[in-house]
Length: 272
DNA sequence: CTAACTACCTGAACGC
DNA sequence: TGCGTTCAGGTAGTTA
Image 1: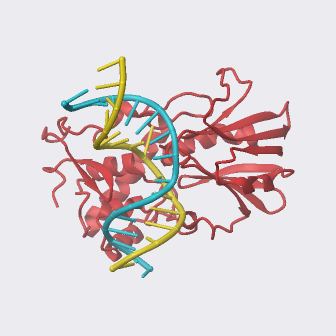
Image 2 (image 1 turned 45 degrees about the vertical axis):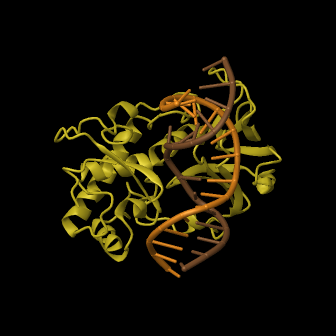
């Protein structure tokens, strides 16, 4: 479900609710594969940061709680005005205590692709994708020349390479299609020249920044901690619009499967 | 090492 | 209405 803009929107609401609170209790669904989260009990949250699609709560005692929403994960708090009540899809519950009245935080995840883990701070060897994560796209670490060099090194088609999280962090299926459309790059391309790599660098940053400003894209499951949807879906140009006219050239957008993922693009203005 | 598959889950939408 | 098939915003594990 969530890519960088959605995860960032969750982080902005989750941070104030977790910060400066001590995790007093953890219960997890017995079928969930993150039973070691109870190692967070007794530790106080310093802050919640984001790396790519991962949320990382800093804990005292040199630990971190790493959270990934998978396709359908969301965090909700009991007793808030949105009327959230836990249902059959709650996979973990954290009881938080601290400034204010404390809080009960549910991790809801229909498809069970989400993950929670407690690790030594900065030690991500048990989470391979996080350990090898590329630069943050909206930071100065994301450099156009190094991005071009990374695209030159791989033999894989450009879209699956973006989805690997290695050339840049946080780009998923929606924003890969959107950025490639903007930069006029064919998702199958195995060679991307310097000018096109720079155009893609710019498109990734623009597409993600605009989506963050609209609090993400809600297609089906994604919702923020307060239960609201993102507003970016109406602004998508490529993703989910197969058969509709390309806004640039009016050619009906094509849909193919690439790297096992549905891919929508314009075969006329995104030539190989 | 990389690239390409498959597996992991559940529900909604669609075709007949 | 009912049943089977396909698809879904992600990653981890295995194989060549």
